[in-house]
Amino acid sequence: MARPHRSATSRTVLTLVGLAVTLTACSGGADPASSATTTAEQAAVPSDTAATATPQPDAPALLDAWVKAADSGMTGVFGTLTNPTASDVRVVEGRTEAAGMLELHETADDGTGSMVMRPKEGGFLVPAGGEHVLAPGGDHIMLMQLTGPVLPGDEVTVVLETDAGTELTVTAVARSFSGADEDYPSDGMSSMPDGSGSGHGMAGDS
Image (cartoon, rainbow, N blue to C red; front, side, top):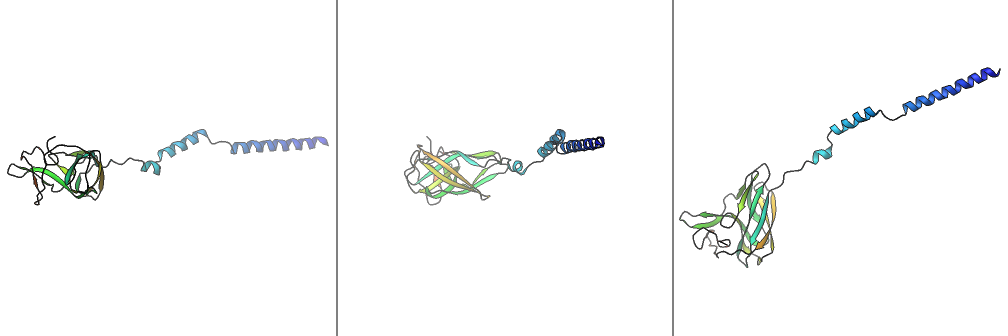
């Protein structure tokens, strides 16, 4: 009578072992090949972070900006306007706390052989991927009605505005620059003291 009892026990043990093996197989780690495929698929889908991480083009700037030191009256700001963007940029006006007036000027022949500086019609055009030089005797940013002395080493902040409504903040360092003095007549144009066109009052020959 004991033999059938032992057989039933043996069958029960075998059944439990089989269930354990089955459960182990079902709850085991994922297939390595499947995991690799899932990882590759995830990597192929761009995330929002990757989409927003693309660097934007640099903005226009005035490089090597400097301003001629002056005790009073007026002075000029110079440097190189650069435009690394894909579209032309036109600087049309500006402002500064260092002066009561700011104008964009050019130096040109008045038709009689005399050189005059006058407001630049249309402002300064900086072509896409190019530059526009502001230099003594040429185009420049004129500061008039200075609110105080501009001494060598001082920093003058100028905000330039484009025709697109964007602003460019520039910090120009003052430095000594020798040149002939000039007055600024009421007609808005200033003649060169020597008529040579080699410079203009606040930015003549060094």
